[in-house]
Length: 246
Length: 237
Image (cartoon, rainbow over the protein chains, first blue to last red):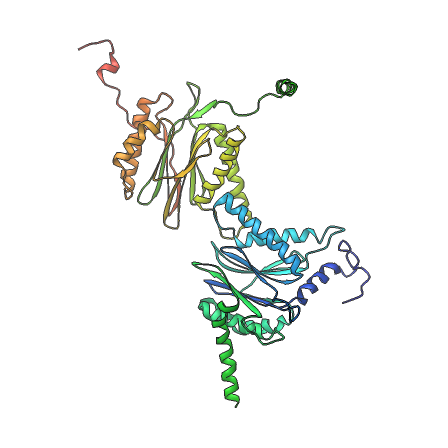
């Protein structure tokens, strides 16, 4: 994949019909720490591994509230992610001011993707190096969207992105058929369990974060103490498995 | 002083292009919430001052499956509002994502438009009602050319505010059935026809309910002109 002749700028196609700069941007997303999202008919849940740069530092914030009914998890260049988060928040606020209603998740994602696409077609600029998992609850129910630097977006029942996200995706593929009518607590459990394989260290209440939104529930972020009760659910199973082994 | 003289000189070369007074106008619009939804009624006249110039004009129109709007005041400004709202519904059709605007959202959007125009001292000279029924709830909102906006159980504009509103307040109740709602609005429109010179005896009545928006064909109401004093005003008895 590396060392191609036609990869100097984003406005050049390769003879194989690919734009390498965009693909490199997507590779930047794959290098970020993992993020998963899944949904039932009533709730959508986000979970992310919050890496620490060093022992002395704090954990990286990965989940952000965009509006009362909408939030995102980011993977890749976190700085780009913050800029896009600001853009999404502004769009939602503008919509709220004019229409006094919540913005449709799909329409917001479309606007963001159109913005991202511009940078795959402009010289002297680069694509955003961040992928987003957007969860929302609006007029048409729950949504999970994935956006990429290419300007593509897809809607999912469950998705994972970032380093070692394949193991998360395998876990989600195993259980996604049960998500439709699942309770919120169980959804969060599955989100954390799917994240286990993608993390280098054991998950604790301090090195991961969870967020959810849904029917009658505003976007809520769980970190640290508020996340502790769910971590014990995930750990208990580990303890039991060990017990049975012994 | 020089600045003032320059401003005066400049203004002579740029004619005023803002609304100063309404030219072709519609009279009252009445709307009430009732048991099944919201009912709206207006006559079909657009007056040119005191002349009854356009006698088959529809001053109530459908926005989408859950909302309709009706307006009194400058008719061309109402047509402009209709175009704006159509832009929104066209965009929504293109999105094709299963969601549609609620009456409240349309009301809010038009509020912003009206208020912005008022702030430029170039108003849209209308008094608009936004009537809708979504997810089991009726919605009735009002907008005027000052940018004021509010929600109410009943709406009247123009002479309707003075003549029809007291009549409605006397007989209105939230759980009126369709027949009573129609009867109340027709009674008010008849009185308005007798008393407001800028009306004609030709009406549209519309309702928005769980089954969508329905606007009637134009029809007339019975009026009584056989009073002796009308026929022979000079006779004193």
